[in-house]
Amino acid sequence: MIMRVMGEGQYEVGEDHLNLLNQLDDELLTAVESGDEENFRQAYGKLLDAVKQYGTLLPDDSLEPSELILPSAEATLDEVRALLLSEGEGVIPGFPEYD
Image 1 (cartoon, rainbow, N blue to C red):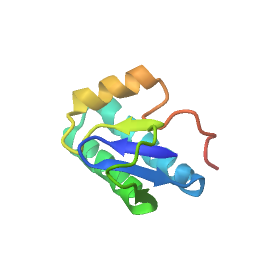
Image 2: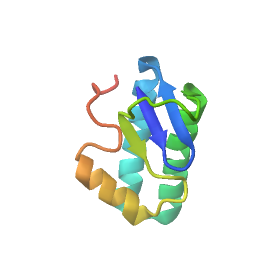
Image 3: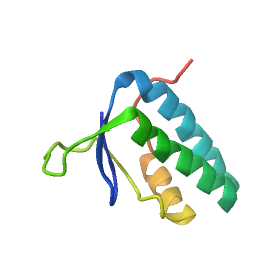
Image 4: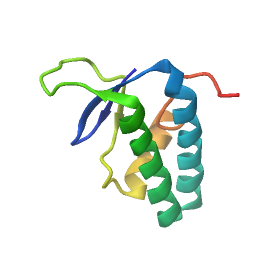
């Protein structure tokens, strides 16, 4: 799956890491719903860190379509909340629930 982190580039993340990303996405959703800025920052930071850790950064001149676009690390709680509401399933939609 190709994921773009705004302002940082595209990462190709293998399917074997999607369960972990879904777990982190659930933590993010909980933090956003609580409205707690500190919990939100921690949860979103963990999600972005995992994308970078388990993903392979694509070259800047790569023209691969992104299947998922994540806001930058500086995104506000309200910006991410709006994204979650528009997706309806978290920021990483469409993948089977992890065990």
